[in-house]
Length: 224
Image (cartoon, rainbow, N blue to C red; front, side, top):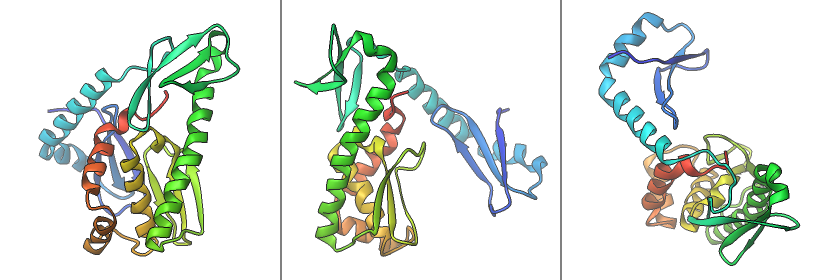
């Protein structure tokens, strides 16, 4: 079976990685001196896995349509879908009575207005969850920032700083809590060892359920 793929070389990479993106693009990440002639053999070896991943990505893509910001279109917030109501006049994007309201004369700026609204809610909700679990566990970061990363939900630096993706505000609170706790635990354990996951489970016994939700729904958490 032949696959179309993109090669990405890195001098820092030591191993080969096969990645299927959320939109079904196949990427092969290789060390800088890795022989390209070996790639086809590697893809044949893992063809069943690759084919399954690409099919799953296509199924997700078929379900998720590009945002048009039209009347009645649904948007995700804290794990639930809410409709957009296009009105005759509204000062800005408003969330009221389980609906988003936006004036039709502001539809050209709808994407920017939604981004601003989500980012402001993320600043309130995500930071509150960080404070809650920091106080509960004693794991306190030096700085917390919201990120706009395309793939990473969170990160923790060796300096004790944490970045959390603003798109998390689209997920249920328990999923936000999982990512927050995940990064807080990295302040103490900077790897994904057994001790790391035991600590996460100690704080959030049902973290695997939240982790699964995030993996299954990551592709819909956007306003593209």
